Length: 127
Image (cartoon, rainbow, N blue to C red; front, side):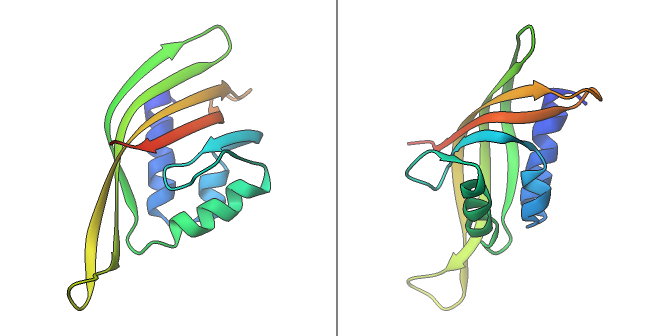
């Protein structure tokens, strides 16, 4: 699977609201600096974060741009994606669609079967 397709697979897992499907994209010792979080996370903290993140109604992500840099035994993927989800409207009855443009960097480690796993993931809202 190409690194771009792997990132798309991660976005598809986010849209599925399936925490296990998202976590399957990470190494056991992965580090996450999350889009909607204030500090770096590791280990079981990733599960806690994704339970909160994927609980957002109708969450989905769209890959906007990506640049791939290949190293000897790693790949760095950098670019932008946009998350969308629904939240209670403060001014009207019902839900409002929220769009969160974000930038990202992933460090991917190759797997023996030719795939990838995320070792380091940084995502932040575009100011």
